[in-house]
Structures are given as structure tokens and as C-alpha cells.
Image 1 (cartoon, helix red, strand yellow):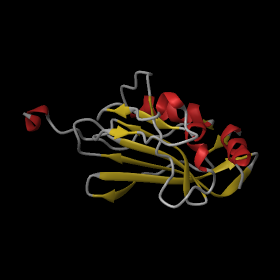
Image 2 (spheres, rainbow, N blue to C red):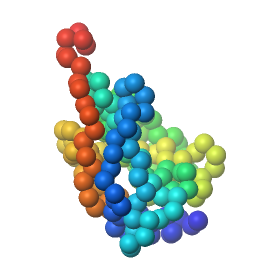
Image 3 (cartoon, rainbow, N blue to C red):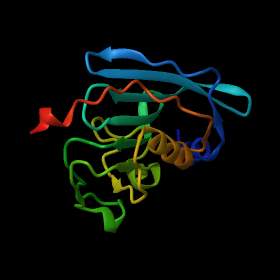
Image 4 (cartoon, rainbow, N blue to C red):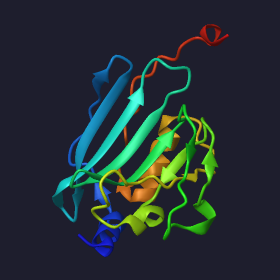
Amino acid sequence: MSNLEIEDILRAEKFFPAPLIWSRSKENVVRTRTALEIDGEIKGHFFLEINATTHTRLQIADFVLVYQGIPISRMRFNPNSPHTNKLRKGMPRILKGLHLRAGEHRYYSWDNNKHLGFPPPKGLHMDVAEVVTEKLNDFAAAAGFFCGKTNIAGQIPAPPHEPLLEEFYK
């Protein structure tokens, strides 16, 4: 698959063929995964996957568009660890070596990662992130941001979230 074909998929308007349903993945994480519809057809090997924490002070979520088992766009909402971009040829200069702190929402776009090609070399995919500068106060705002960036129409229902009390963090 060429970079242009991936870009065409990302540009196309995408729809959910059925309502999204959350299921427990781990003790503290729920997950949803759905195929996406483009031009009235469900695109084979093309999925939206979302993982979200349920019992954390701030809800942490990962949004990932996956094609043929490989991420082509992703976002981390309220990440609990820092991230540093590599110094790699072909990537946007402004993002080389960029350090993102824990808690800074980050978006990994195809444009910033396509220098690796599709499929990318084993173990090297979607590792160049940029800071999300928009204020994302909750899961709904993060879902709206990701859907806007990836041209997904429709609503993503909020996952369950029972935040821990602040006193547990003192």
C-alpha cells in the first residue's frame, strides 16, 4: 500500500456501521473496537480501537486508527508518561527530539510518520508525536478532536469512569 492510498483513506469521511460498545479489557481498562464504513462499504482490515481507564483520577485514553494491523493515526489523552520523538531523517524538523511531558495530550498523525512508509519497518510505527494545543477537558472533547482529525462522523459514547478520590493521591 502506498502513502497516497493511506492518505486517501484518512481523507475519506468515515462512519460507524453500528453503535460502539465498551467491554472490559483489564481490571482498570475498557475497550471498544469497530470497523469503519467508507462510501457505504465496510473497509476490510480497517478499525478504530479505543482503550480508556476506568478508575484513575484523570481518565487516560488511547485512540488508534488501524489498517492491516498497523496504526496509521493515533492520539493519547492524559498520558501518564513522557514521550520524546526520535531524531530520524524524513520527519518534520520542528518535531525532531521534541519532548512531551506526562499529561500533555499528544497526536501522532500520518503526515508526521509517513516517512517510515507503509508498512513501516518492524517496530517503527507512529512514534512521532505533536502536542495537542486545544484544551481537552474530558473524554468527549478528546474523542471530538480525534474524530475531527481523522474525518470520522458520529459520536463515540463516553466510557465508564469512576475517578479515584483526590485524598488517595496525597
